[in-house]
Length: 255
Image (cartoon, rainbow, N blue to C red; front, side, top):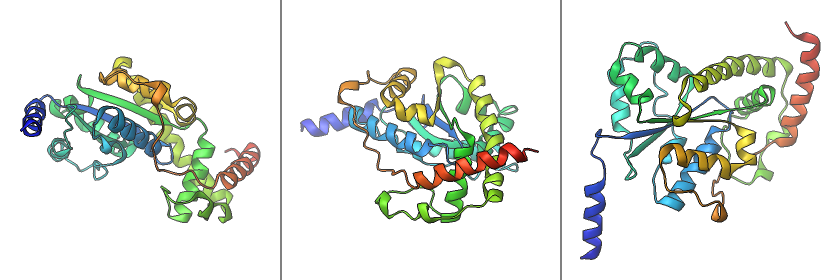
């Protein structure tokens, strides 16, 4: 009886579909480390608060293109899983986010859904764009973007990359990084957290605490924090080697 009563109370307190929902979005680009950040936060919030914000690792708006209409984007937004915390969660890449920005200029509903007072943003960038480009080139060549197995069994250390492959990737990530920089500058500091991936890895408790604060989540307990993410970094030696090779080449071949 008590269990049924408790479940009924939880269901009664849960915000209705589309009613007063708050949003936690991650803005990023390929190879920025946003999947690791999203997984880390989702596991921590589930463990410490019982929340189910696994949408932080998913990209439900990847379909958005220039021809997209505000209503189809809002339909996807309305269909996001509404957690008992009152939050929905999702990750957005620059290409889709730019189109949403453009359409929001003439759609008050879209503007409110993504950039209104109920929206919270985490912006994830890479401090070293050459390292990011090498990681992108490696992922494209191996067809592996996220690795959950034994890092020692990864084939990345044996993959060969060419300068043109890395050069293309550098140009690809550079414009996206400028976009993320502009996005971070456009968002109110009380509703957003901007981070570089390496800074997050070095100070996970500090950045997780900031996310708790902007969202109004329960106080973060640093003393008991353990990262439960299952994502594994791979190919570190090869990536470092190719990044150094490209830097040496680029110093003599810029432009």
